[in-house]
Image 1 (cartoon, rainbow, N blue to C red):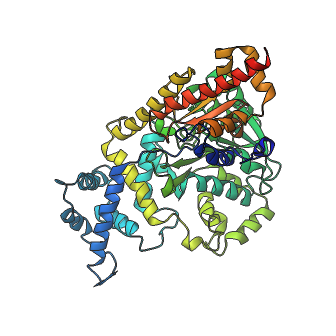
Image 2 (image 1 turned 135 degrees about the horizontal axis):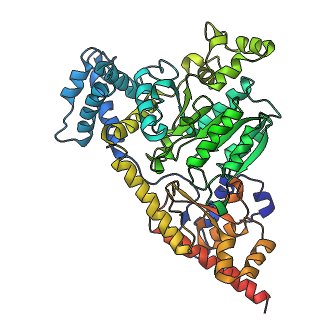
Image 3 (image 1 turned 90 degrees about the vertical axis):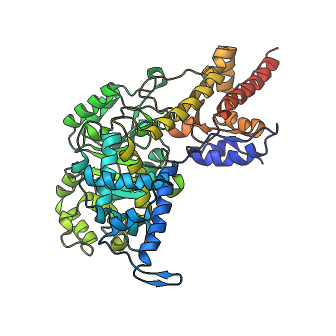
Length: 530
């Protein structure tokens, strides 16, 4: 397989990684294939999944009460369904049944929700016997999901009752829907300036450049010398009213760094100076940082929050994400202030799906736009997917003890152990600060080269090889796939390692293989300088 490095550099980081997989699987040294490129976790939450399976059994039993004709069953009746569920459960012999018993108590005592209504919503949702109604999010599900976000992301700022949710097909769909509706509703126009905190998840760098949007990117850079903390002086750029929006991944991907208290204060100040600023924060890794606080909690009027259950609960294949937006938000305000021509255009766009399109909220416009408006009546995340989100959320809400959740603690400990093994094996600096999620590492291979073999060798690597050369050889010779940090907006020579998707002991092996390849480069360097 011949790979043209110049052509390869034109691809995105994930596409480059895909090209290297075949090389690594048939590596020259017959090493164990190690793919630490993707962020897909290799663990799952079992409790929510087992509860889902039990509720599916219950749902079939309930459906047979109304029609029972071979493989054909009927519909679910709401009246008395909570009592029938309790009769179905066997909490003494099934951990998941005890969980569902505890859920019934929680929704009644803590959330003050009608138990029959909740059980009926969950049962119908899991069976998947109807379109999502309401199409944006099921009624009780929105309450439960907001409580989860309040506990894990909102911090002490009470926002659950003031926030509306739109469950989506993962965080990926949330990003796509957000960009699309911002453009369709004239909130972002070609030539508008948007700020992006880099390094960042590659789509946030790629999407704005597409012909669909043609946005101008302003870089708010975090630097390794600052331990990847974004400095308030960078955030001050947002005070410029010509900057229309800020896109953030928090904690960051690939540097695994959450915004600290100073950065959040700087965001608050910037919004006061630029009150029309729109902020989109992707907080998928927030639960891997203790005492995490989202930007949404300090600037709720200006912020759209994106979250996904995929990483924490090992559910990337389920495609479970959501968008959260405050009932009082800058997006609705800006739409209300559009010129008459744009308002007339949007009135015509949405008039066939709502009675008063001029009053249609931006979050509902995103739902409509996600199905090309005409299919608004069949929009919304599938009800089984919504129920999986709800069950994941409830495993936290029912059993969290204050700020402690045993499952979340174990997830953090797992990525933390892998992070430590990787860094120790390479001799790379570790970040032990409270704002470090440790889900990814950004390793500066040039810095390691200089520390081990001197400045001249570092310069040799920098000046004689394309930025992906080391990654290609690492895959082809040693069977290790890492990702090019440049694709995330970092500088050449920085490699992203995911601490999520390999057995724990393999991370020490990755470090060993990286250093082994560096030795080979150094051997060639010495041979040329004899």
